Length: 287
Image (cartoon, rainbow, N blue to C red; front, side, top):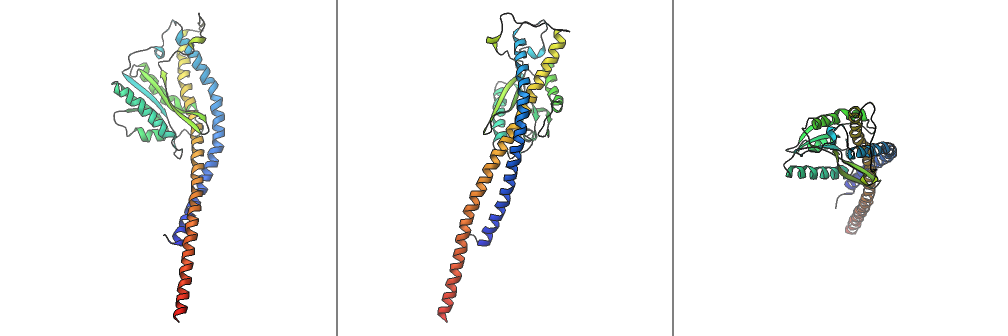
């Protein structure tokens, strides 16, 4: 059994760790509420523009935009949105598993894979992956990512798609379900897919002013940027929720460990006192 002094040192060390995890839990809880507000504020725009694009995809346009054209998939691009910091439980791990599954599936079909990385943790992980090119990356967006921080990185992948260097563009990020649950999702960004077929009218069309080319080019760019920005904002909410839960679990575990060590310390101290008393009694008896 370890000595009482050693056990006392361990207890002090774990108490200091518990203070840190408790502070991190409280900070994450505070930031999570603000991140959820920003996530909810961004969702209506992202969902509405997605519906508009889905309708546009279903009608016969006089101008065929490259983002709407289906072609044989030879090269795949994946935009991966992760956190910049750790201490978020299995949040990034689940995202990386889902992304790796998409990469392996593409490679099994003989397709080349290029990545666009958003977040330090994904950059650290995927830069060690063989056979996958990192075409663009951006890190340290903070707790309040702005769409202007993502445009440059996103434009690299969009230019690749325009130039037919990519035939499919996917988005991998975490979706906020609730405080306890965050889900890793890989969805298709390009080519744009038709949605809400049942809700389309029999004759659905738009009148474009000044023209379909200018309108579609602008709105499709905004669509891709909106989906990636929504993913980045939602990922922050997921990060804060996962960190709060992870730090609460760490704090609770530290408390349980302190209780166990305190019991061991008391037993060790009692054994030491009993030994000293036995030595005193034995010495007195010898005299």
